[in-house]
Image 1 (cartoon, helix red, strand yellow):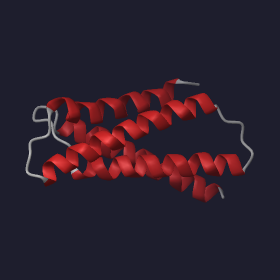
Image 2: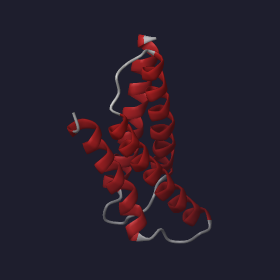
Image 3: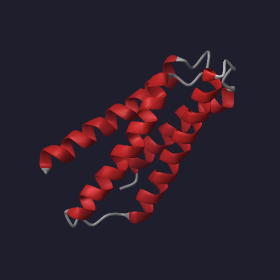
Length: 116
């Protein structure tokens, strides 16, 4: 069980890196990259799995923090989804949407690290 938990944390961090790194790499010409989309999916799925695994093991969790993180993850997911749909339709991704994807991910990272 420890290996599974550690591997899920690893994937969760990779997802955050994909979103945040993609945002920084395209900061001057904002867009939502495919890796940001994959990162958003990874963050949402691994986050839910990590909470489920912790609940199964009887860990005491801060459910308010988890709810805040879930709302932020859903926000990143929706922003990335809308950005990728715009690209698929041959449209330009609005600057606010692109920065919303990366900025919300940055806030989620800050909540995860700073909220003790």
